[in-house]
Image (cartoon, rainbow, N blue to C red; front, top):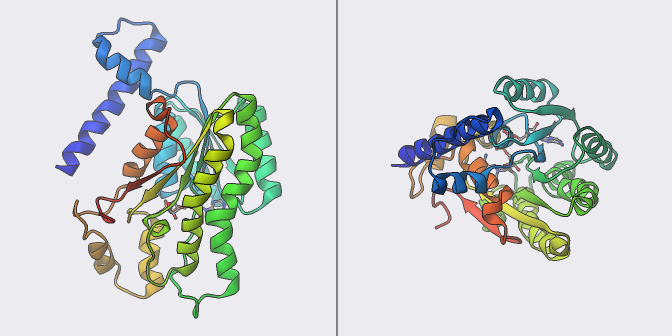
Length: 293
Ligand SMILES: NC(=O)c1ccc[n+]([C@@H]2O[C@H](COP(=O)([O-])OP(=O)(O)OC[C@H]3O[C@@H](n4cnc5c(N)ncnc54)[C@H](O)[C@@H]3O)[C@@H](O)[C@H]2O)c1
């Protein structure tokens, strides 16, 4: 059933790509008006997005999907080789993308990168604050440097990037900022105290930013994933010293009976970036196969 739904969405994505190609080529459009209207609503042709943590997992899947929708992507990551590889993959599929090596915990790097992206692409319409790290430790086990790292990457980086991107969005008369939270931004989890604190901050910071910048036409929303199959999730098994296969099996125990695919989250980001969500701001979308239900 779930795979069927995913196939259905993938089919729509392919149809949109075909439709865009036909438009570009000026060919005859065989689709009916109703379908075209839906495709126009979801198309992001000509927009520019920054995706952080784009070298892997959810960031990579989202950068690829947005590029398919016609968005020029500035991929940001500290992992240079995977970031360049991701960018090449997007370009080979016909997308526009460029990689920027940037540590999102550094204000000077964020400032320089945003300025470069603005200069190269002329505007910034979408910011997906996605970079994240986790340490599976409680208050007694966690070292102060790890507290700082977790809070800086998952929470402070959103402030740093947004403070450089928002003035550009204001000049462009609006934009969409999507922050990546977590189910653990809504409820607590064991041995993840700094991560839970940071993600709780992301959820409420999203609301505060939405209130402040609605008047500028900037929408700010949060996506809260459940367990998604990425290097971050699999790395947790190692940190906890448990068998990876058992860990992943337990992570799949939820109403929809599987862990998430990075693309499941990318679809929610696409919705929040597109005109389909034009009156949605300050909200949190939980995408977790029913884990928090
Ligand atoms: N995978 C899950 O189960 C899950 C669940 C809930 C929330 N999330 C959130 O989703 C987001 C993406 O996680 P993922 O699972 O795709 O992880 P991932 O490890 O696959 O990707 C994270 C990316 O962030 C990059 N990154 C880390 N520190 C950075 C820094 N200082 N500057 C720039 N880039 C940096 C990494 O190099 C990596 O490419 C995170 O915010 C994470 O907390 C993930």
